[in-house]
Length: 314
Length: 313
Figure 1 (cartoon, chains in turn yellow, purple):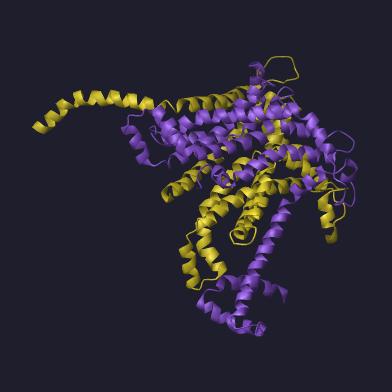
Figure 2 (cartoon, each protein chain N blue to C red):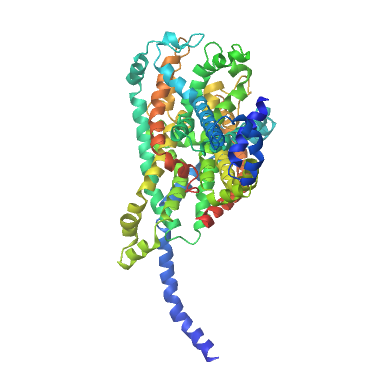
């Protein structure tokens, strides 16, 4: 009883001091974080709040009238606009195809590069280069020197296979854009998977060999499970960037022919730049953000899982 | 006949060391190489399989690199040799197109350099203290902080482009280099924080404790103890930020016209409405890409870590 009482009596005197100190400590800890936090909130969140506001306004750049409250009509327009739905679907198709193919190629390239052979570092350097090429440059070089129907290198190289002056950007526009996306992002996947392969414990592989496991069995039973978090990370990060692909669409096909390569970013760009429809673009933007948040919630959960593995592993 | 042979080659190499596998595979193989010395055939076979994979990888690598190579080759062509059928591989190289590019790219490259360097410096100034507060002496909700930063990377900036334009217009930042510096900083900051944090976590705790016992304050702890240890990490963080800022087109295209137009926009301007332009475009594309390619080649080792935001060491 006495113990409790002294404890209770002592508590205030002892308790106040650390609480004040810990509050100071807390602020001292928070202080270095604040500039970056405030900066990020101001620069990244305010535009979205303004977007939300404009999504309820009737506002066109080319009309001198000021913005005017218009209720949900922008949303009605967007939801009934087949171009919006089409661009949404194309965004999904482009991102999913590019990410998956780039990952498959990335795993293949990483497996090739994981072997020792003369000039390995040179080949690795060659393979990562497409990722470093400025996307605008890549898009324009693919559209011209590579894919042109009249003088493009690809048609020349495919000649022995019966391909004659194919106008890739008019007949296979979506495929061409996706190919360039894959070309630029395969190195990214390769690097991440290669890091995974090289982090694989050598003794396990040796043990598998001694046990007489074949190359394919070893790959499926040991390498793949080990690579899984790396592949997940690659897919996640690749998707974050590829869903926003704009340069290739704008510079290779300008969204066409028709709307066959118009993805969400390009649709929004056109709404603002060609239709001058700030309100409509804002409403489409808000819907995009809501969809992104839904996807991102899952992505963030995955992120936490992948990074947990890393922290436990280090 | 050819198909099983190829597959067999791949299999033997991996199975080679296993005793059981060797025994099983030895019998049919011996006949093929019986003329050579006893231990020879297997080794020779292993070596040729290895060489085969090596050559195959080289071929894949070169094929993948081909568009870049073609861009550089075309850049050295005279305009008349760039748009021919069949494409010409032999021609007398000229620097004419490069000269033309260098005569016109001045303002663009200046804007690109200012936006890239400015935003990268700002990212490091904001990112280093923030990473410190999320790793070495973490705030209470450091995990939420980390995920807040990364979640801003997932928000599609394109969604807000109209309002961004209006905001830039009203704050008189439209077509100014500042709007690019501000936005590129926000674009790269989450990446940098995750990355720098992963480097800070590796600073030995004895080092930090020793500094604390010496009575070093937080600022001295960061500048005197942590920064020297993680400086290679800061360099690779900066390089990643440089790559993304240098290559950015969307924001530049929407928010600048002439006073702050960057190199990707110079590329677009090198495609005229009519006339031959392929060699000129290739020269411009080469020149615009070379700085980042060089940086990436030099920083290959830290590239993985940067791209995975510090997840992969």
